[in-house]
Image (tube, rainbow, N blue to C red; front, top):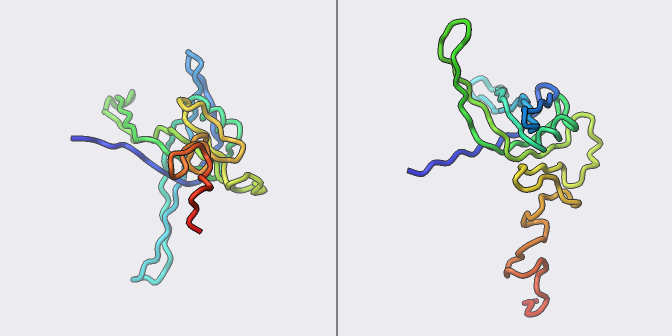
Length: 166
C-alpha cells in the first residue's frame, strides 16, 4: 500500500528561533508554531477559537534564515512531513514519544512589525536540495508563475503570439 506524508501549516512563531549546529556543521533550528482555528458555534451563538501548538525542526539554510529573520509572533507557512520521535525517559524509564514536523519548505509571511514591503506577500526559502532562496520577483525559482518554464504550450517562457484567437 502506498503512503503519503505531507503537512502544510500556517501560523505564528511562539518563540524566537535558536540555531544550533551539528558536529558536521549542519544548521538546525527548533521553532514553535501556534496554529489557530476559529469557528462559529451555533448552539452558544458565539465565535470559538482553538490553538494548536506544533514543534517544527528546520535544517540547513532554512534553519539559518529562520534564526536571522524570524522572531516571536512572525507569521510563517511551513510545508513538511510528520516524524515520530521515541525515547526512554531517564527519570521514570517509561517510553515517551512526540510527533513533530520536519520542515522542508518555509515561507515567511508579513506579520507584526513588518512594513509589508515584501513583494508578493512573503519570502520563500526552499529546501536545501533546491539551492534555497527566493528569486528576485519573490517567487520560488522554477515555479510555474515565475515564467521560467513551460507556458501552456511547452514553449520557452512566453506565450506564442501567432494564431491568437482574438
